Length: 205
Figure 1 (cartoon, helix red, strand yellow):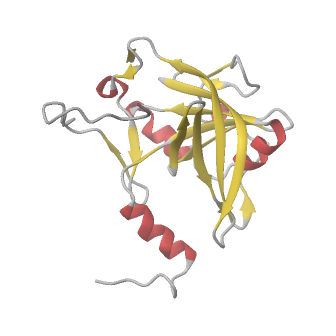
Figure 2: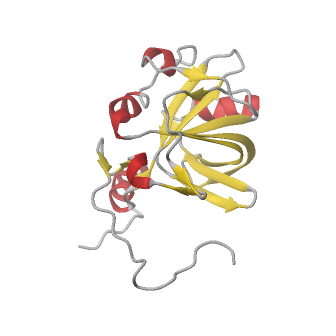
Figure 3: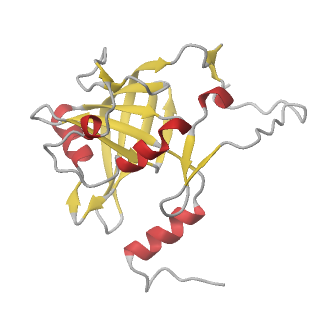
């Protein structure tokens, strides 16, 4: 099968690409509106873009032709928190993607608890095994659909006790979730180590 994207609509290309680019980690992002409403939304086009300083980025598209609350809030306050959920939180992650009005807090609606952050105004999720307090760095627009790639500098990491040793996260204990095509999620299966093959260095030397 050969598919040419030129005649395809943006939603059809989105469905195709989100089934190809898998699995995707999920940034469960809290933001604070100018009126003080705590917003929560999941974003699976998410990665880190720099290690020094630590920076993460995520793609924030439009909803019904309008900017999402997450983007509006980050522009208003200049910060956000990336929370990483575990496999016990899949339903709450999925439900947080529903279209709540801007004056309704998804955190409260889903029965989640939050804690004050130390370096930014936006609170973090208290039960998330990992949270990263981020200061907004830059926004880059891509394509014809108004998608924004938002980058933030991580000012502080919150990591549950027992998850990190010598700056390495125990992924099996973290039990992260990922997004695949459609309303579908996946969890870790077997972890395959290539340590016996050779020393493949990652990051700057």
